[in-house]
Every structure is written in structure tokens, then in C-alpha cells.
View 1 (spheres, helix red, strand yellow):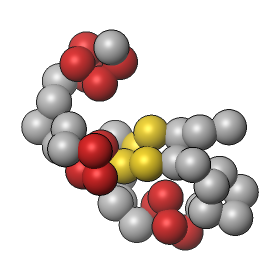
View 2 (cartoon, helix red, strand yellow):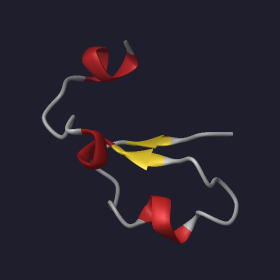
View 3 (cartoon, helix red, strand yellow):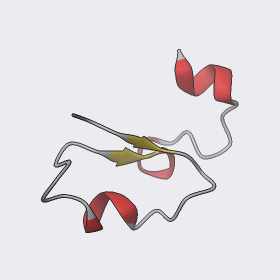
View 4 (spheres, one colour):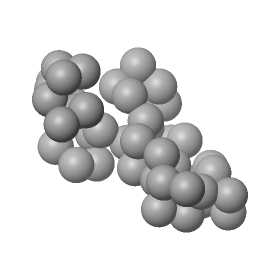
Length: 42
């Protein structure tokens, strides 16, 4: 399972959880820090 962490959560979470969810990302890591929820969803 791949997770995408919202801007309100720590950007460290993908690194911390890499053993469980190795393909997870944070919105900051994909240049979507200021994106709306709708933009992220799409």
C-alpha cells in the first residue's frame, strides 16, 4: 500500500514508516505543499 501524507502531518512520516509502507510520500516531496485537497486527490 502506498500512502500520501497531507501537509498537516510531519514530512518525516514516509521515512519513519518506510519498512511498512515503502512507497509512501509526503505532499512536500512531490511539490504539492500548497495544493488544495481537490488537486491532491486528482
